[in-house]
Picture 1 (cartoon, rainbow, N blue to C red):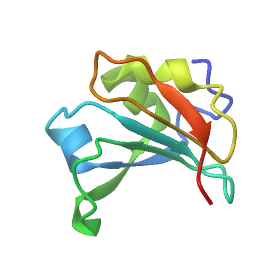
Picture 2: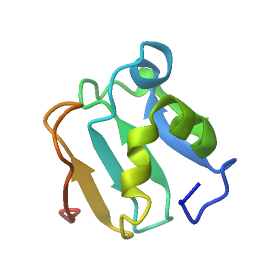
Picture 3: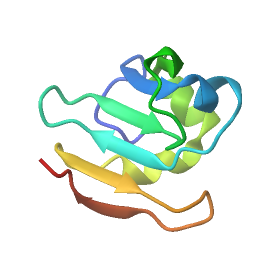
Picture 4: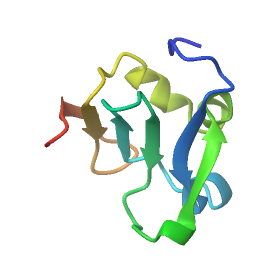
Length: 92
């Protein structure tokens, strides 16, 4: 694993990503606490939010490993699962 965080580190995601295999289209590496968010971009409903171990996220969605070097305070997004990631500082 190329993330600097241990694979048991908890990340924020949604039930759609973990249970319905929606693609990860938005990734955030939070500046405040270093937390990772792996989101599908289809819901803002707090009831959909779950935590998942980083290692488990990598098993389900190996393409997120491309973003292991995403700096704190940055976000990456893509239009769909075949598109290239676009990286930028998180608006703030």
